[in-house]
Image 1 (tube, rainbow, N blue to C red):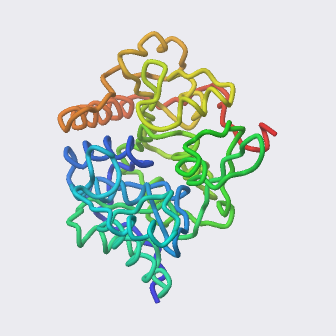
Image 2: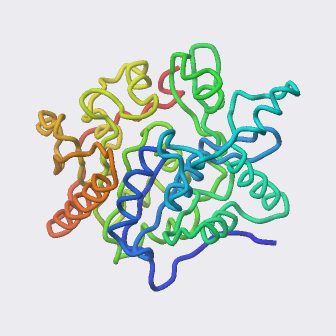
Length: 342
């Protein structure tokens, strides 16, 4: 029986990226193009994972895997390119649940993963094998082999994330978040070993939703402390540009939590965890609102060149920070939890 728990070897990655799905996958693509495969380790959020139709679905993990493999659907940002929907059509004819769409080719991933998990393999081992078979050279890890489930606190109840995001189309007003199972879950050893390595070049928090894509990773026991003690520069890239989120419900969530929809708010959310912050030219005026080094550049990634250019810029920023004493933000972060908002 596989017990998971990948560890690093002497050729361990020098760059660690923490990522959610579509937005993070864009920067991860750029990083994978400008770094050698052995130099990059990507840790994916699994708080979005859920069980549906008897299958274990891992949306962010699969988006990253498909994107790195070059088989993702660029129009939707998720799923496999050229997928067909005969399964969903047949399921609807039989009266099945169709609110969460699974393409025919994508379905194979979920079926095979579920079979292997039930047979005793770990999520990290299954992911590694899938990546190998799809030709992904970059190391992609789930944040944990134990399940963590993001719950969205609304005015009326706590909703599993996919119920909020897909079934109810983000309509309920958000009051906070919690991460079921996080206290009992363990971050993968390779993740924690990377954070402690003296040879680590940078930790990059990708432009993903801070509340539902990055906070579940930070909620794992020991991660917040290890990130705070990390010897390498920790850099966050803003997912907010010009007062709006380029993808997903980030801006809506911020408004409903009573937070200004600005790049500065995201920086303050991460607070003393980060040494540097990357924001878009549109938000250059906010530089004066932060007390850590800021890199102003184009963060909107519309094509592969944009992704590679941003990746190089972020890495150069990290190298610049590493040449001087690292200092973290003095601000108290604005992380919102269910308990704080209730």
